[in-house]
Length: 74
Image (cartoon, rainbow, N blue to C red; front, side, top):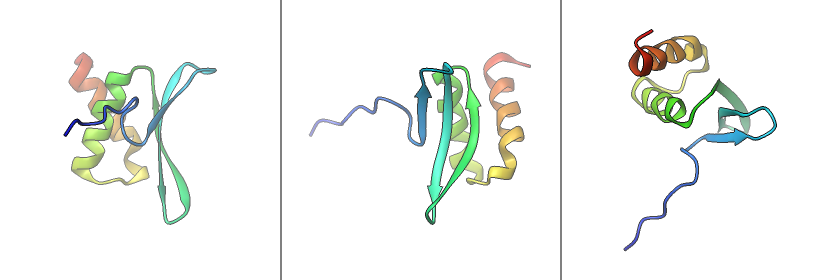
């Protein structure tokens, strides 16, 4: 069987007008915003971290800081 290749990482999309990646997830009929990122690589890493620690929108800043630390050493 061949695997379908996703165009975008799960729970994310690219806003062409603003030129940013957005992570959004729907839970119990409500949309939750999990952050905006400049590159697809950052989004993939953020989704990976959210999968590890749990999808809590309160942790947005901590996840964004961890992504930057892992990718850029900031």
